[in-house]
Amino acid sequence: MKTITLFLLLVLSNNLTASDKHWEALILEKMLTSMAAKKEIKIYVQDKGLDQVCTEMNSISKINYCDQADFILAGKGLSESCKKPEIVFNYDTFKNDPYAVGVFFWQKGRPTIRFSSKRLQKFGLQVGGELAKFVSSKN
Image 1 (cartoon, rainbow, N blue to C red):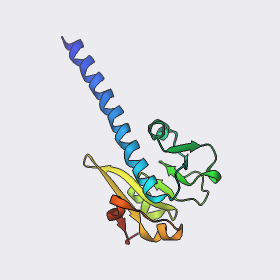
Image 2: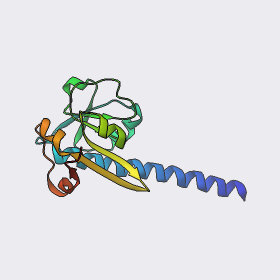
Image 3: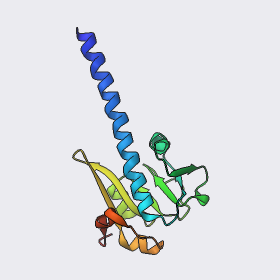
């Protein structure tokens, strides 16, 4: 009986993780499409842990070279900078990185999104639609 219970917990925890990745992909795709003026958006992913999230995005193309990208998804470490607008996943990184136009992170089990109006303006970007309320002039 303990084995069956443990098995069910493992299966459920794996499904929750897959579901979280799906929601992350939807949120990131919404963030990117709200900023981009073109239909085909190219992203470069610095953190290989984000590859699974990228496969679930429909209107986003992942490329291998950051100089050809429209946006960069920067995970933990910013090992390479192509002077492109970045979406980061840590608020402290967002505050300190001059190329971070947006941040997406989980806080108390809820997704949190912020955009920097100054950095968006620097790259000639605007956030449209329902995400415009997440643009802040503080950073």
